[in-house]
Amino acid sequence: MKPLTEQEIRSAFVNCTKGEAKRLSVPRDLAERPWDDLDFLGWRDPQAPARACLVTELEGRPRAVVLRCPSPGARHVQRSMCSVCMTVHTGGVSLMVAPKAGKAGQQGNSVGRYLCDDLACSLYVRGRKDAGPGARLQESLTLEEKILRTTANITAFVAKVTA
Ligand SMILES: [Zn+2]
Image (tube, rainbow, N blue to C red):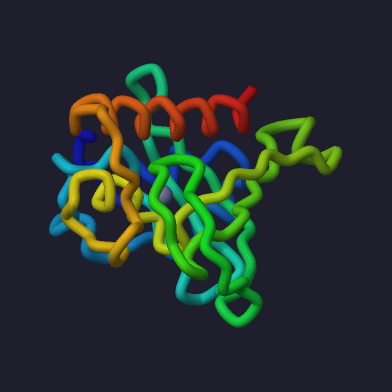
């Protein structure tokens, strides 16, 4: 994806107030992130262990989403699969829940997905990060197809949050 600045990310949040978007922790090392290899940028909020964020492009515009996730101590140690990148982790997948944007969110509606705890899906797909033996399924898809699937999954998720 196209590199983003802190300001672009903060103004891309769709499911929190402007004040919250201003106060959220955004990674400081944005310039060093491997943007070419990212379908989305996701991060855990170091100041709020039960919060994660992700930003991706939807219809050519950056869209960022705040997620609630189990705090590190509350994790299961089961083997489970990330619904976005299809990586299998032992205790490294969490149900992340995004309040919906706008009125629907104010009424308590949300959308959940099982995601890699570290939100590094793009790197697992490309083999730039290793989740251990058996983590990646043997598939007949090409890397290109796996990347397309990851992008499709994450944009579908963000589209559901904004819908
Ligand atoms: Zn993943």
